[in-house]
Image (cartoon, rainbow, N blue to C red; front, side):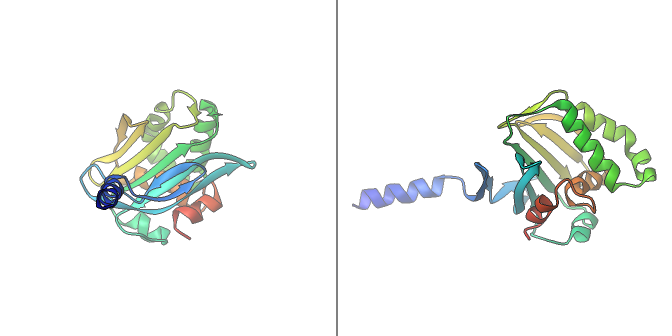
Length: 187
């Protein structure tokens, strides 16, 4: 009996702790940023397009917040994680989605200032996204935004202004999905 209890305790302490599950994707309660800082799950939800589940989006911050202005004004580390659940999202649709997100949430002047870095970002998406693909956008103050696909680094884009523009795709005044925005904000 003692051995069984000990085995259960060891098993439970060795497994990763998940905060929740969305559309078959298990969401970590916390992650470790590249600088070693612990980021907590602020919220996660489903990106839907025409009643189709596209991806699970998760936002990680140093501390939970539902205040978009505060999130954007703090030069803290953060992660946006996208876990695709739809069978295939064509490269063109991905690029169109990113382009729409940047254009709807940025002024013409800001877009002009960010243009070369946005173009670099687009080049990272050279193929379709398929179910079980995972994209991570990790911002580290002073280092830039690391873009990864399936844990493979695609590149780093400098600048807090780019990081905020990228965050605004999901958290801005014209988010990709209003329900996902609320979920990422933990509302």
